[in-house]
Amino acid sequence: MFADYHVHTAFSDDSIYPMEQVVQDAISKKIDEICFTEHVDYGIKVDWDSGKEIVYRNG
Image (cartoon, rainbow, N blue to C red):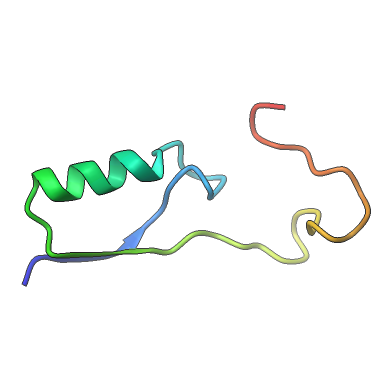
């Protein structure tokens, strides 16, 4: 089995790799399984429900 169980996409702030492109690339490389392991850094960044404005990468 050919797998990658540690993939970050543009949903993590340390990557700009679109999720759709990850899937397309995995298919083209004949990867059997992938696992998205996005970062959720509680306490370091503003939480979505804190009532404070979230500053996004391109904003």
